[in-house]
Every structure is written in structure tokens, then in C-alpha cells.
Image 1 (cartoon, rainbow, N blue to C red):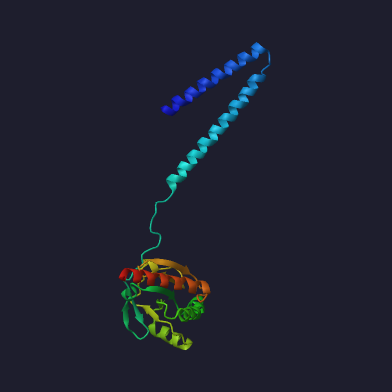
Image 2: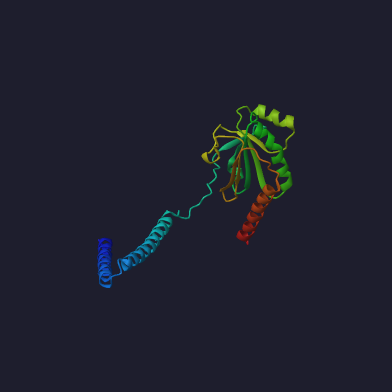
Length: 222
């Protein structure tokens, strides 16, 4: 209602101004010159005011659509089991509180097999920097995985799925799928597809996370 009254007021003033300018033109005999000049001025002002109103509405819409601050890193799940290649059943609870590099792979997946040597080199490059590596094969046959690993001479910590189930947060449609889980239980990085994991950027990233965790643990115990 207020907007309607405001618009009606503007129209009334505009009509009065136009009538006055037309009357002045007739009185002075300027042949509509003043009317044209006045209309140009009015249209210019109206365009500027319209643009300002449009910009203000867009700014308001943008402000309303801005998402609220939320935790963007999904929570990891430790409620599942894996089996070591010697047959030992292990709860993923062993990884709670650890900086975890988790790689899901399969012996029948060429990209998975291609990246495993670079993961082993990454583990060697990090040494004792406090990163826990777990390479979990999705193959159903544990003996096949064990023979495959032994034939290639890899020294990574290899496992197979305990009961065939994977938590949703780690359940990718494709392998290889790699996840980095922070010690406080968040998936801080994930990648689907093969990668050169011994790249210096990957080494620096994991080493930085490890140092950060060490500092926080020292502060917490101090």
C-alpha cells in the first residue's frame, strides 16, 4: 500500500511538471523545446533511480541466498571392519585419532594397480611423520589379493573388506578412491581416480596435517 501511494505521488508530481512545462512553452513560444528538455531530464533521473533500485534488490537477493556457515567436511565412520591379508579381523576403530590415508582399490582395476607404487613411495617419503596408511581391496577373495600383493613385492598395509560393507562416506561408485581423514574424524580430502601420490604437493599436504595435529596435541596436553 505504501509503495502504491508513493508511486501515485510520483505520477501526480510528474504530470503536474509536464503540464507546467507545456504551458511555459506556449507562453514563451519556444515550440516544445522546454518540454523536450524537461522530458529528457526526467527520463534520465528515472533511469538512474531505477538502476539504483534494481542494484539494491539484487544485493538483497544475494544476501538472502548466501548459505549459512556449515561444516563442509563430512564425518568419517569407524563403524566397519577390514581383514588383514593374514586373516586377522580388524575394527576400523584402530584408526580413530590417527591421520589416516585410506585407499580403496581392486586387483582387477588397472588404474588402482598403477598408483599403488606411488602410494608406497609416499609412505616412504613421510617416514615417521605420523600418517597411518590403509589400502583396502574391494575383492571378495582375500587369498587372491595376498598372492597379488606378494607377486608385486609391495610393503603397504593391505586389507580386504571384513563383511563386504563400506560406510557411505567411503562408498564411491569408482575405484581407486582415496580419502584423507584428520585425527579429529573429518574427511579433509578425497580423490577418485589414479594419481601420482608421491608428488611433492601430496607429501607437503600430509606432512603439514601431521605437524598441525602434533601441535594441537601438545597444546591439549600442556
